[in-house]
Length: 112
Length: 112
Image (tube, rainbow over all chains, first blue to last red; front, side):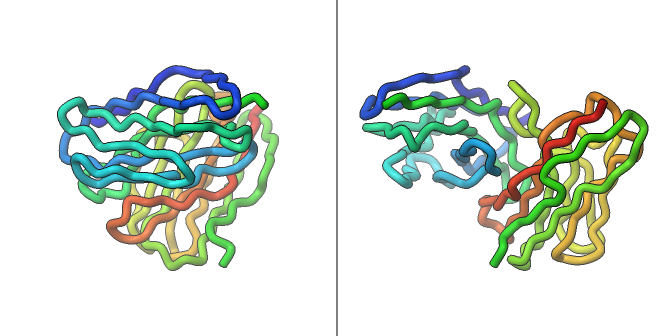
């Protein structure tokens, strides 16, 4: 079946540090890939997405590149802020079947 | 445009009680779904619907019922609550083909 593996947290960084959260996947078909973010006390919201190999999704300074050869979709940001503190979920969807498969989430805490 | 709304925000039930978690969306989305979020488990799909009158099971459907009589509403019914159903429940909706799902703010349910 389909699955997503992302790095275990929690991740604690100082403001302006570089962030990488690793995500790898296995899929029965050709997936679309997503990063969702959950701020404290809120629901999830889409951060970025990529729908085919070598696509780069980007939003709010975050980036992730769809790497088919390594089945990866790592999230990066060059300089994190305290306001980026949240839980980040990698997810995939195969064939527009509406069903998202999520990783377990990575808690990021950014200290001033 | 309220997006996806969920009620209640918090609920405490005793084992064996029944209740309905409400979900509504005003974006005319065909697809709606229910997830549960547990620590260290990510989000797991309970039930989903691709349109009014059509529902199907997700990954963890046992103990839950759904129906979809209108495009806007997708209630989740717990028939006989168990402590294992203590969780945070999220409703989400999506339109055709985008892969992007919009999440409600969640319902935190405790079963004692």
